[in-house]
Length: 74
Image (tube, rainbow, N blue to C red; front, side, top):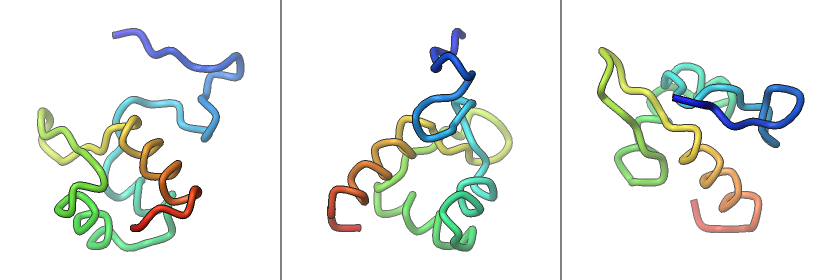
């Protein structure tokens, strides 16, 4: 699978992978793993369970960040 990113190897948010573990997303947002799981349950983030652990999609992180930065309800 090809990863389309900017010239510096990362997209506008500094993300360079297609999937992120819950722990890394929690670290990015400065919240607990439990909070990330709550965001997943509420449908504010999407994950893939194709691997052993839930992995949050980069697209859903970007969407969440854009909604949050535009004053959207979280």
